[in-house]
Length: 464
Image (cartoon, rainbow, N blue to C red; front, side, top):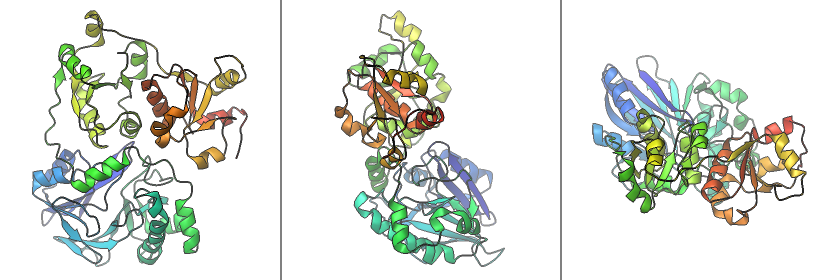
């Protein structure tokens, strides 16, 4: 048996190639949109991809299943309750997919979603019992899949199903079972997923807080409490995955001269500036949206831009274009018209406007000093964490608007008044600050280090 994990930093998504080398057959489980890596890995091992299996309909990223099927001719398999609208084969509890000496046995494990499955993987040349489990978004390292991405109304019912999936099914397996989950650290599909990318059932039984012995009612309450913000663009991503994503095919991003780009901007296209922050501060196109081309781009863009807006990229290096396009496509942003092939110096030489400066980073002590003043420079503190985080401690008089609600509630803020955005560590606040900048807020501060740094500086905190 051969297995290879593919991991996307930032999104925290894991996918797998598993197969039988003697039979030359393989399956890809939970593929993301960059399908070339699966094709290359399979070819290197002498494997033909014959099966594409989804453990569930994803809410945080768009699948590469239709693209991979178009390139390989492999069938796509989903649980019979998935309700997808594209060609596929259904599986149910007890079904088996055979890859030579390797067996994938389907265990229906609802809880994260109604159609979630776990694949118990057996190498018949070694033993008749499962060697490992591909648990999708059921069991993670140190966590389990959240129950609310189908909808808040269904969360308690799904949490009850998760209890049965864990305690009546998965935990009946041997402690030696290797666990390969569908997500790792960075994903919003759990509360607090561990940094290790695999584990064993025995270790999780002993140390995973979700698996602590408790009554079903207590588990349900634990499962629905203290959930982080939902991934951005959830409804669009789930709709794309249900209908079947349009295959991306071969990427041929178009380099655009400045002259060629202007009609796009006149028609409503957004310039997405992915250069380092220092470069953006020194010189940028007024109205451009700044999100660095780091591993958080996929997580942040959904809070800043509407998904259908045409995008033109400004890159530090044209060699980054493929990586950036996949970062966008993974979360449903496919309308990339091209990238600027000329520099901002050329832009400026053509007499087109440029600006400088940016959302200002501010240290907690500096913010505290501003809050003591009574003049017009005193900012409103906007806390973009979740309510449960806010209750554990926040800056006095901070206004709570969770990041996932900011686009709908931005009208509650005055764009003429300075706003200092704070979260837990400074990650979410960057996304919120970029959003406010796009909405033409006059003065926006991003609090460095977030509430944790505020507390480390022993500054005043309110708990309620």
